Length: 178
Image: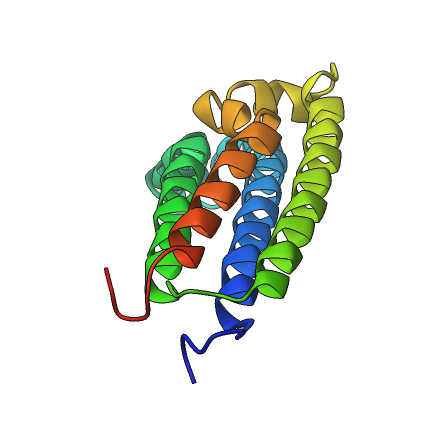
């Protein structure tokens, strides 16, 4: 039963989507940086192998195969940023799908849950900042991420605005009234 008064379905989906977008972005950026660093080391070694038999040049084949993979890994931050924006659009879509006139306890539960998620955003942002401000190879890879860094470092403010805008959209209006 979608959009019944007092139903928690919309609240759970919106707040769960916010958590999923935030955690996915954190893991995608951090994992992309680690993968890019590791691949850089491995690819250099593979390209340095040279000839292994009379007619097989591994360096030639490695350049053909590894160059597209390297290009994909170099642009991981762009992919993460696009997925982040799609996640935000999805959150607002859910707000319009589950738009109804909810009861008072549901609004209070949404606000308390939103505050807990914003607190989680602060913890995750601080954790990311600890990785980002380091001097190791992972930190150097994270510092190349550009816009994705901004989105994660300022995620508490961004998600506070998104959560409460989605809450206002979801909790104002009548069922089926878009």
